[in-house]
Image 1: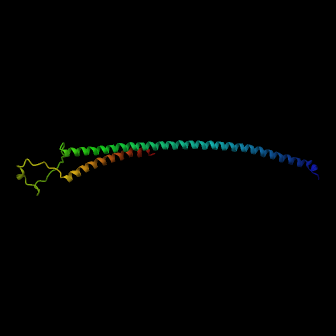
Image 2: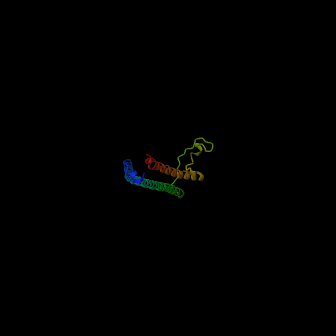
Image 3: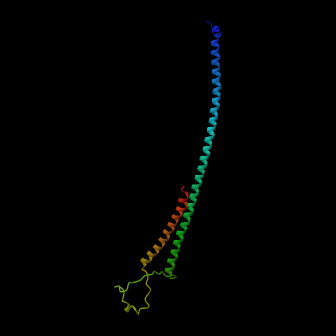
Length: 173
C-alpha cells in the first residue's frame, strides 16, 4: 500500500491529528509550566533576599549591642580604676601626714591589768610624761598596706557588682 493511500485512511488521519494535538498541548503545557517555574524562582529569590536583609539587620543589631556592651564595660572599668587610684592617693596622703606629724595615727587598744611586762598601777601612778603608745614600724607599714588593700578590694567588689547588674542581668532574656 502506497503512503498516499495509507494517509487517506480515516484512522491514520485521526491518529495524526491526535498526535499533532498532543505535541501542541505538550508544547503549550511546557510553556505554561516554564512560566510557573520562572514565577516560583522569582518568588524564591525574593524570599531569599528578604531573609538576607533580616539576617543583615539582626547581625547589625547584634554588633551594635556588642559595641554598646564594650563601651559600658570600658566606662565601668574607667570609673572603678579611678576609684582605686583615688583610694590609693588618699592612703598615701594620710601616710605622709602621719609621717610629717601633721596627723596622728590612733589605734584604740587596751592593755590587760597585771600583765608581767607592765609595772603595777602603784608604781606607774607617778609617771605622767610617758610617751603615747604607738605602733612599731612593721605594724605601721602593715596597717597602711592593709588600708590600701581594703580600698582596692572594696572598689573591685563594687565594680564586679556594677558589671553584674548592668551587663549580665540586663542582657539575660
